[in-house]
Length: 105
Image (cartoon, rainbow, N blue to C red; front, top):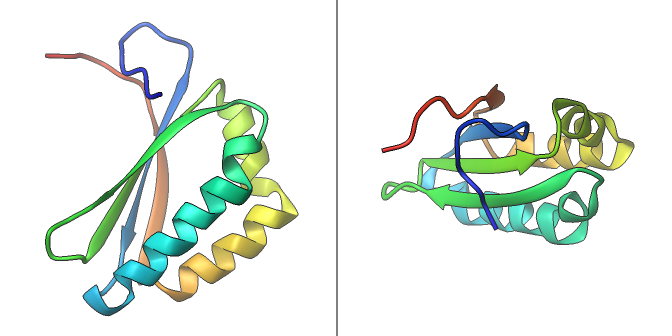
C-alpha cells in the first residue's frame, strides 16, 4: 500500500508515459504485467499505482521504493531492460523521475 508522507527515507518515483489512445490499453497491460511478474518482487519495492488520463494519452506511474539504489538496481536488470524496450515501442516518451515528498495537504 502506498504510504505518502514527509520525512520518510523511501524513494518516490513518478514515471510519465506519453502514448496514443490506440496504444494506451496495450501499454497499460504491459505495465501491469511488469508489476505482476517482475517489479513487485524486486528487493526494495514497496508499492505502486498506475493512473490513466481521460484522453488515454498519458499514463502516470507512482511508485515507492525503500531506497534510490533499489530502484536503480531494478532498472538495470536484464529483465527490466528487455521490458523497457517493449514499453518504449508503445509510447512516444517515458521518463522516470525521483522525488521526495515535500508537503502534504
